[in-house]
Length: 209
Image (cartoon, rainbow, N blue to C red; front, top):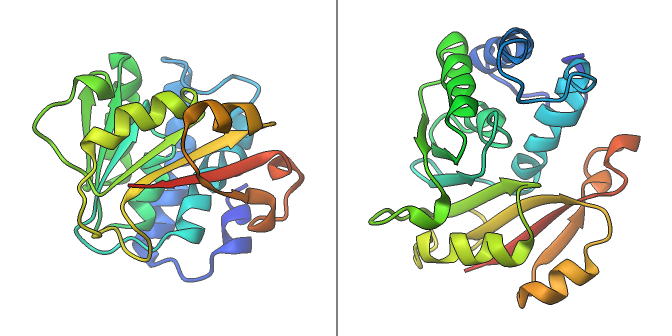
């Protein structure tokens, strides 16, 4: 299962390999107690959740010290795989359901992931904090994601090879959702990055600040 990661990424450090190998079994174990991934999906965690999250890493170079907020992180996607991929980047995972963040914290402890903080709140309630990048996966319409993330983003371009902004993972026909969002995102099909049938209707949307 984890071999799907090695099919597309060849330069993981020994620590990253250890962490990626650890999080699959940890999620399986915790999912029995607190359901954060559908039961039928848990056996495909490396393809459907971890590799899907890493599509952001495939297109975005994040500079050390970059501050990233994962809005509506749920069980930790895309934040946990991205934190392993970018160990010098600081990730803040936010969700309105506290028990899901308990799973994130347990997985981070079990896999020795040190660059993640969590907060049990809604993104729109966060005050006096700024981030260089917001990420999200299938949480809410683009209109809402942009409304929540825009006030939290710094204007300085610190995120790496692109301007600060929002990167979200979405699926299906997005034309109406994009139209209603009043934004002009750059859109990329994930299938163009990872040639797996699962990604044929899945997309990356990037809205610069």
